[in-house]
Image 1 (cartoon, rainbow, N blue to C red):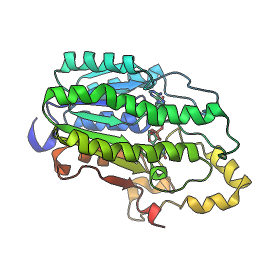
Image 2 (image 1 turned 90 degrees about the vertical axis):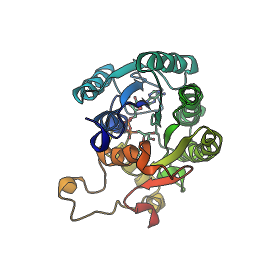
Image 3 (image 1 turned 30 degrees about the vertical axis):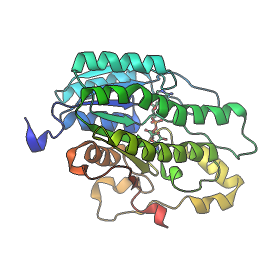
Image 4 (image 1 turned 45 degrees about the vertical axis):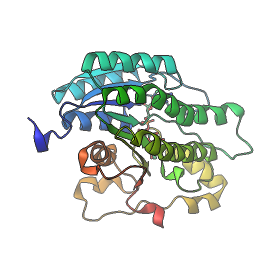
Length: 283
Ligand SMILES: NC(=O)c1ccc[n+]([C@@H]2O[C@H](COP(=O)([O-])OP(=O)(O)OC[C@H]3O[C@@H](n4cnc5c(N)ncnc54)[C@H](O)[C@@H]3O)[C@@H](O)[C@H]2O)c1
């Protein structure tokens, strides 16, 4: 099938944090639209300061199965986005196998909770090193291949509502995600010279293992005024499909936006910050 049903036919996408959650949803959606997928995930613990488990090898294998079920090809590897050499190797192997690279979804990230002056160095460093430095390394490893392929392309940087506004209780996360907003906009200008568009998405409250409801409730119980910075997710009463999910959105709903940004339907957008929050941040 070609054309409107497979708008990404012939293109290749590199997706980080693809074992589960939003990353898996993006991998499967882009494959459904015709792209071959290079999927990476750390599939290993990161630090004791990250209190929820990371994706697993089995989950990454499940992503591969789901991509292949769409009829597309997948190359998956366990890579830490803090490891530039490993990223460069998987990019080289992916380009050798699939012939080109068109789309980057820089999605891997981690979250923890605490006040700025109380967190440990390891807690601060882990979040900054994965979310900001790791995303830069992801760009450092992939952009040369996208430029060399000569087909232009689309880069989607997964920031957060915390990349646009204050979020007390996770300032290290907010600093990293604001950093990604800046990185997006500078890269949009630099990569624009090669026909590559760069936009950031800013999701809010997506139902994945990163959202530890108990950890959030604990920090709000300790510091009730912080609650004002986390608006409730507006609920669409007409959305039958997600009726049980008040307060959260599904990874698939974010994948709708990523697929649109990856494809030519968004060709006028670069250097844009797209809120994926049902308007919650306007409250
Ligand atoms: N869930 C939300 O409400 C929400 C809101 C806004 C933004 N985000 C962002 O969305 C992105 C995806 O998160 P998610 O909600 O799917 O959470 P998730 O924890 O389910 O998925 C993140 C994946 O990234 C992987 N990962 C973490 N560190 C890595 C590293 N160093 N190298 C390679 N892989 C690594 C994990 O193993 C995991 O599989 C993150 O960047 C997150 O900050 C999430």
